[in-house]
Amino acid sequence: MSGYDENNFPHFEHVTKKLRELGFEVLSPHEAKVGENPTWDYCMRVDLAMLLQANTVVTLPNWECSRGASLEVYIAKALGITVLPSSYVLRFAGLPMP
View: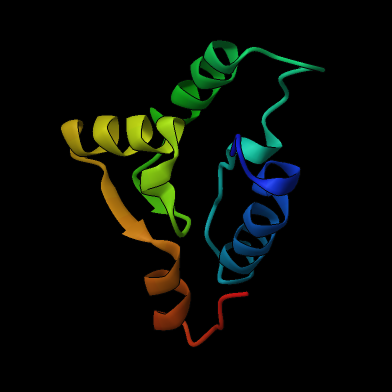
């Protein structure tokens, strides 16, 4: 999220909305309650707690460029949690990506 305009919230919001419209329960880091000006490590602690509740992780484009997303994917794979790109999930459902 860091390094993107508006912390990439518009993209997170779009994918979250579409997944919920498809009936998925979505835990999204952009909706985490972290207060004002949280540190990166605090955000990651909150985010990783959310990750441990998930059975699938859906990645946004260019996730590989994000230190946090790279850590999330690494941990998800190590724990046997399915990791899918958002483009695949939305395309499979017949929905366009922004």
